[in-house]
Image (tube, rainbow, N blue to C red; front, side, top):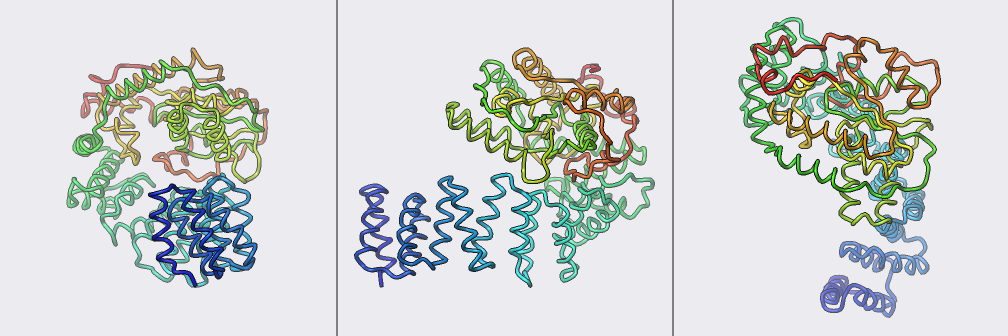
Length: 536
C-alpha cells in the first residue's frame, strides 16, 4: 500500500518546486510503479482535485478505471473533474454511471444536480435532488434540498417537501418560514399567512417573515392578530437589526392599509434612514457607470439566431414590470422566467475577459440555457429583471433577436412605491432617500435614451397609467410587438412570483395606485420638492 500522506506531501512540494504538470507526472509514476490498489487511486484522485488539478485527475482516473473498472469512487472523482474543465456531457455520463450502481451516492447526486442546474435544466436538476432524498432524511438534508429546489424554481415540490417535514417538526420556525414564502409565491395567501404567522412567533428575528406577512393581504383593522403582532415587533425589535427594520417596513404597510399615512410616513422615514446608512449608495458612482456604458460600444453580437424570441422587461422597479410579465404569460406561447440576475454577472464576465470571443460565446450559451430551460418550448421567453436596463448593449450581443419592453410610470408614484419597499439586493441601494431615487431615475432615463439611439433592438414603451386603464388594448399591442397572433389567453399566469409585487400581481388590475403620491405629499413633502413632476 502507498503512503498516502507522504505521497501527497511530496506532491505539494513538487507543485511549489517544479509546477503542477511535473508534480503530476512524478505522482502518477509513483502510483504505477507501486502497483497501487483501487483505494490508492481514489485517494490520489481526491487529493489532486483538492489541489485544483482537474485535468490531471481526468488522465489519472481514466488510467485507473482501465485497471479497476468497478471503482465507483474513482468514477465519481472523474465526473467531478470533467465538470470542472467544462466537459459537461462526459461529466453527466460518469455521474449517472455512479448512480446506476449506487443510487443513493450523495456526492454524485449533488454534483449531477448542480451540473444540470448550471445548464438551465432546472426540472431535471430538481428531480435529481428529490430522488436523492433519503427515506428518512434529517432536517439538515431537508433544508439543503429546499434551498436547492428554490434555486431551481421548483416551488410546488419544495412546498410539498416543507409541509411533509413540518409533520415531523411542527415547531420548526425555518420550515414554517420557507413554507409561507413558497405558498405566497404560488398565490396561496391564506396558507402563506398561517405558516408565516407561526414562523415569526417562533423566531421573531426572521426578517423576511415580517415583510411577507404584511405583504400577503390587505389589512382592514388594527385589531387583526397579524397587525398586532407586526406592531409589537416594530416597537420592540431593535432598528439596528434586519428583523427590526423589516418589522418597521411591515408596520408602515399596515398603517397605510388602514389609512394612517402620517404614521406610515413616520415609520418609513426612520426605516429608510437606517437602510441608507447601511447601503452607502453613491449617486456619483452610478453616474460614472452610466457614462461608461454610454462611452463604449456594445460587443460584437453572437451571430447565431435563436429558436425563440428573448424579451427583456426593464425600467425602474415598481413601474409595472411584474404585471406586464404576468399578463403576457397568459398567452400559451410565452414563458416568464421571473427576475433573473444573470445579465449583470455575465456582462462583468465578458468585460473582465476583454470581450474575448470565447468569453462572449460562453456567456451567450449560458444565458440562453437559463432562459430556454427544459420545460415545454415557447416562442417568447421573458426575463423581467427591471435593472437589466443597465446592460442592454451586452444583451444585444448575447441574445440575437432580443426585444425590449420598457415600463414607465409617473415619477412621483414610482418614487413613493420604491421608498415603501425594503429590497433584498444591494443593487437597489438607491431606494432609501428621495434624492437618491431621483438620481437613479435620471440615470435610467439617460441610459435608455442612449440605447434607443444606438442599438438595433426593437423597443416599446408601456405606460403604467394606460396599462391599468386599458389593459386589453395595451396587451394586444404587446402581443403584436412580439409577433404573437391572437390566441385563447388563460385567466391568469401560473408562474410563481417572487418579487415584492407578489400580492398586487395576483389581484384584478385596477387604477387605484395612479396619483397615489398626492395623498402622501403632506406627510412626505420630498415627493414634490425632490422628485420632478414627470409623466411618461
